[in-house]
Length: 180
Figure 1 (cartoon, rainbow, N blue to C red):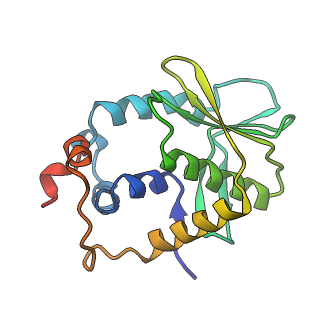
Figure 2 (figure 1 turned 90 degrees about the horizontal axis):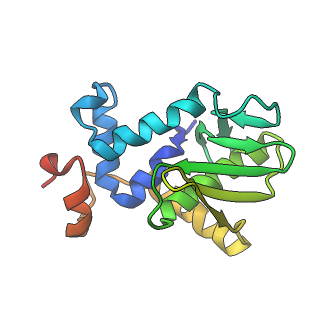
């Protein structure tokens, strides 16, 4: 049986496959060792969801653990409105809608659907300015591209990789001191 990919790692992989490798090395360490301010702020902003304190309304699922056998994915959702079929991924500050954000939503959607939930709408929600960005449901072509991406994540081998992130990404990476 293949290992499951954590949905949160999809965005990390797009940022830089090598950062995903370093992240997995540091998972057992205290996060203060390697988290920078943006990661710490993001973690704090997710605590409301993790504790189920976003809302007391029963229509909202918060921090639900999800999985997909088809894609071998697992993770947690932020918010799912059962009545409306709306899935919301929260980010602390959205300056741009990155492909990694979209793939996280797609992965969560596929997991929920496989678990028997209907998903009618997708949103990225920026907490810092309370803006909500609609994300289109994936087309057949986008699903194929997503599936190819999942295969790429699954087959990535850091020892065989010649990948080098653009300097602008490296400058923002918390693992820069470890990467050559």
